[in-house]
Length: 419
Image (tube, rainbow, N blue to C red; front, top):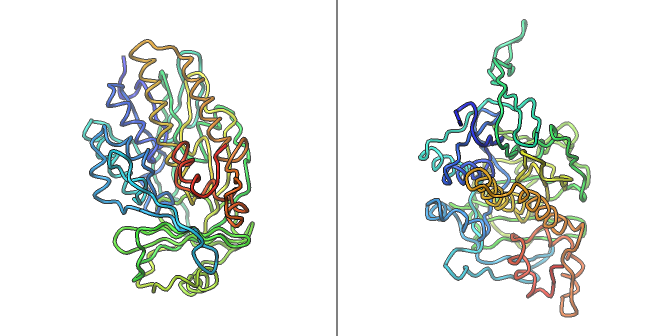
């Protein structure tokens, strides 16, 4: 019998993927527990775009209209060089009226998901970290540490997180949605292999008087790929790619309580740096910064888990993959992974469906990410493609905000084929 301590499914990680997995399971009558080692959701988040396929996932849970009311629709993608726009891609609404792409910061999506979970009696258990995990044929054995903050030190007091108590229990299934530094993945001893070159970015989010025209802009330099996202409320986010190895690996950590501003190896960027970068890389952008909200230097790696789980423990989202930030592919595919995985798990638990379906999930996820990370296939230019686009087809794969058939449809008018 399931109890708060021994649920049917333990979800590790309370980002969008973990919250959505919990919602999908709760809606199917599965008793779920969600734990996260942090004390709250993030203030500043990197992911901010929802693809049309992702929006459709929200509809059965009554969240589509709530999300769209807060979101900023994107109608076109402009492809630029450092002098001017080279071409434009239209993003028409889906046949059922769902937008092809909207901008909604990750923390806003998390609030909506958490609210829907609370309405179903499920609340995230913060400051709870999985410290040990073992997968068996018919269950997973888990140790969860409850963390508390204590003041330590003599001359100068400071706070540290301590383990107040630990609990051990068995659970039929575990879903690891605990991000790129996944404890669940490490406890399964699944290698997180490098699948492409890392990218470092300096990111500025600011209010502007520029006319953003509901357009996502991708700017391709000789060695850099920059991104300008329009945001709700007259704001925007510029992400400027930095030279290789400009930011240390530690800079990719997602600080949920503040903003990481540079490091000893790469100094913090200022508003003057923002104007300099815009002048150098996008002289066609004439907007003025009316208020700089925050900035960060961050590193994005491209990695892929060798497997998406085994037996009774499975991965979804960044725990299984990482890619560049431009197309918001990792979070959007992660949400779809959560939908697929929870349907399979609910079927095994409550309908007697075969556990072998989980291996199908594993193979499908690996195949999709081998394509998205250009390990097997990618975008190939045909004879009608503009030479400028053909030279950048590899970069475009992770920059276009879509996956699967939708990605193929976006690429087709450019003379690019998804293989």
